[in-house]
Image (cartoon, rainbow, N blue to C red; front, side, top):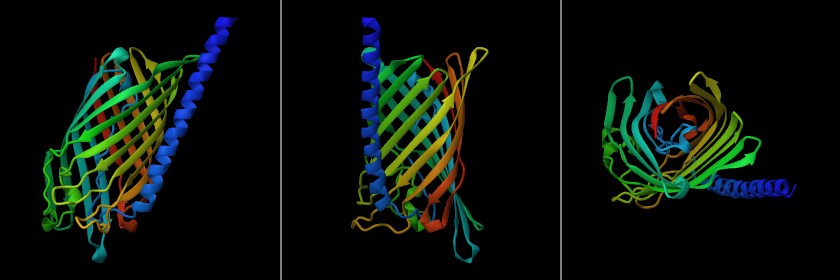
Length: 321
C-alpha cells in the first residue's frame, strides 16, 4: 500500500512539475508573440524566407542520427500593372544529432544546408545557390522519457545554439533587383533558443516545439528580423509488420520581425506572420526513419496582402544509431 502511495505521489509531483514548466513556456512564448505582433507588420514584397527550420520528425528525438532533408517554401507577389513574381526557397540539409553524458541527456546538433533561391517573373528567372549558414546547437533533456503511468511518457528538452555566417552574403544584392533576404547567408552571427516536448499516451501523443532566432548585425550594420516559430501536433502510431507508421496533424505559427537599416530605421515591407495547417507521415523500419510533411497557410499577413504564402513541403530520411 505504501509503495503504491509513493508511486502515486511521485507521478503527481511529475505532473505538477510539468504543468509548472508548461506555464512558464507558455508565458515565454506569449511574451515573444506579443513583441513580434508589435514589431512585425509585413513581409518583403519580393519574397520572404524563414531560416528557422527544425528537424521535422517527431520520432527521432530518442536516437542519435544522421539525416538528409529537403525543404521547399514559396511566395507569390502581385504588383501593379499585373506584374507577378513567384519566389521559391529550397534547402537540402544534412543534420546530425549525438547524445552525450549520463543517460544522453545532453545532445549535440549540427545543420549544414545547401540553399537554392529562385525568382520567376514574366520576363526573367533569377537563381542563387550555395552552402548556407551552419547551425550548431546543444540541448538538455529536462524529462527523459519519464513514466507518467498507464503506458504514458514525457520527454522535454531545451536548447541553445549559434548560426555561423558561413553562407555567401551580398550587401548590394538589391542592385540585381533582388531583396536582401534572397542572400544565401545572413552575413551575421545569430543565436537560437529552442524547446521541444513530447507526451506519449500509448500509441497516441502530442508534440510541441518552439524556436526563437536572434539575428545579429551584418558588417554593414543591416539587421534581419528575429524569427519565432512554434508547432503543435497530434500523432498516432501504427505497427505495420516490422515497420511503424506515424501520421500526424497539427498547426504551425511563424512570425518574422521587420528588418532594420544601419541607421536603425525599419526597412519597409519586411517581416510577416502566418498560421499553417500541417499534415505529415513518418515511417520507421529498423534503423531507417523517413518522413514527409506538407503545410498550407490558414491565416497570413505578408506585405499587407501583396505577398501570399504557398504550400510548404519537407521530406527527410534519417539513419538512427
